[in-house]
Length: 334
Figure 1 (tube, rainbow, N blue to C red):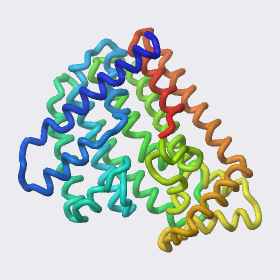
Figure 2 (figure 1 turned 30 degrees about the horizontal axis):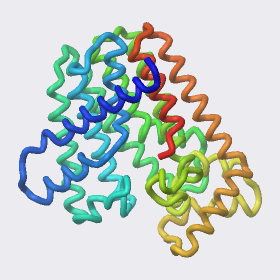
Figure 3 (figure 1 turned 180 degrees about the vertical axis):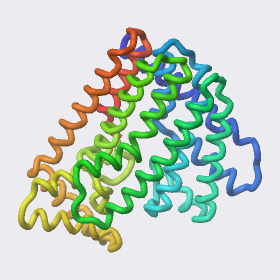
Figure 4 (figure 1 turned 45 degrees about the vertical axis):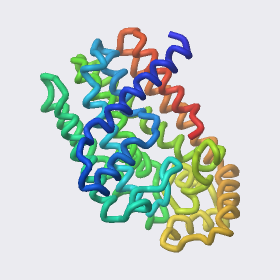
């Protein structure tokens, strides 16, 4: 397949998922709850997780219809986490649009997240497979681990020294687990062998980690227009990122002390007029410490490891497209 064909197939799958995301919302009342749920599920997105699930299913001999319900469900689960993350972060916008708690209110945002979680399970259980018990266990475990990852993220906000191992554990749960579960579930729904299932799980785990580190990197190197939000948001909010963790280990003296303040300052917002200066200053430290180059290296290594795991699968257009998607995620600008 050519790059153009890969792009067309990706867009086709994304449209298929987009259409199904809102099809389960048939009620019009309670009004704010239903409107908020549609608002979230109709928001534009890359649909990486469901597309990876469908491609994984196809790569072991399955079909789109074998994985579509579970694919839509995992995207719903992902959106549930975003709604509640926005509440915890008090984020005013998501993907260039007002967040649910900003557009409506806090209570409605909590309920919207809960309803979307319920919809995710209702949709997932429509999957037709002889392995529904095992599949549901994986789906549920991914939900639990995402919550654990978010809890680690909150916990790390108040600690000055987070090790690379602790950071890796956090992103493996918060971001990596849903992607690894998507590829593993695709394998199960396609009736893969244990070897094929492990290969796809490994692929998803590595790609998931690369995806999050790329997010961390884009926060300081992306174009604001492409990113859809201001550069340096993680710096301003004092979030634990790959760059901060590695810069803290490599910096010395005043620069190290400056970075330490980022890990304890979240409760004290930076005035708007000082934010750009803070972002510029910290980004310079990231560059001098080698943290930015370390992030790029780690992204490449994780992606290569993920693609190598696919060697256990027979060559096919779907396997080739899994490799193409992993490369696309590394090149993305938002």
